[in-house]
Image (tube, rainbow, N blue to C red; front, side, top):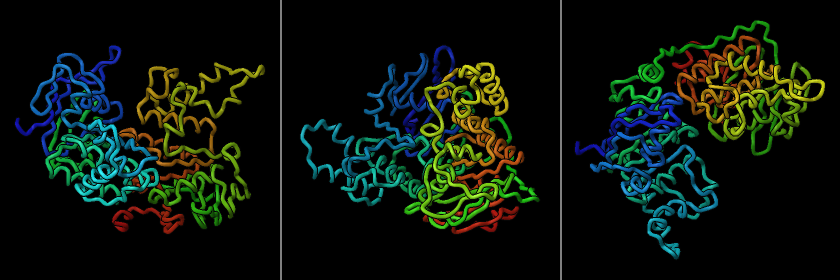
Length: 491
């Protein structure tokens, strides 16, 4: 059809004999916002790499762009045809200005040997005017929010002849207001005739912004659907082939045993006068915008951000937590927000990542690793947390996001913590994996572990927490108990 910009038919891709994609069809129309969804490992990333020319599809795959069929398709073709990718990390240059970042692609394209600073500013202002945003051209990008960095990345790609922009998890670290701003910009681009391929694990956003949705499962296309004909439950079923039912964790600890109490802790430029109690078997939620101080409080409890004043009590005894080692000795575990950079050693095996917190307990009399004890521990937690892997000797980077997160959980559960801090534990994983992580969290709470759950997602907090603290500008501004009718009352 004349209105089709990208047409892919029978696209397959194999890695060492394993099919990552199997005869996938995809059509993206001009002026369309097309959603691409699927569980981790469904083939989304492989398909994006083929569209962008980074990977070559297997033989007999058909790719047509703007009416032209390619025999060999690579990055030169995608650049010529105006296909650009913006990842969740927008790949900006933090040490360069707004104008320099925006004009970068255009300057490279021109092959200019000498820099014309007025031209750079003109290119940047034209791009910003096009999507109706205002940023000071001389500001260093490293000083800006992630949302503004994402907008700069969009400005950069539209300085060239962009026709299809692929956005891969663009909202993963954005607040709801920032997501609204991004969606406004996307709609401006669509009105100009550009096409957007929007990839996200956040199903509600896919339902809000897209015109059509293609669903992948296990490397195969399930189907392409008009978004208006779908709802949340239907998409999750198509992705996972499972019915995921919403339920809520009920906290029934009548004894109200306090595991940790925080009294008026403050840290300059981080947070002020933070007070709360965490009870045995409770899941305590903390919400707030990025920069609200929520992660800084979590780091304080784990000994990585010592407060200027205030008091922390564990089992009703005052403690001073000056390091993660001290926090671990006190029975505190911490799953960080970024599992790749902070939670895992990506070049190490799955098994080694699991037991890294208990190496001393695995030593024999000769101070050597007791391999049988190590393997028994790894096998136990692999089975208990249902970690899907070929072998625990495989590198942890080979796992899907949901399975990587299970490994992070295992790393701390082997320590048998009394208090477990989870900072956005389901960020960047699909709905089925998210549901499984929630079941694990609830089971841990039922076993008496006190859990602090930090999240950007309202549904995650309401369904799993019995109490939620809301932080704003370093302070707790709201503390409420979650009841069955809470959704109606807070909306």
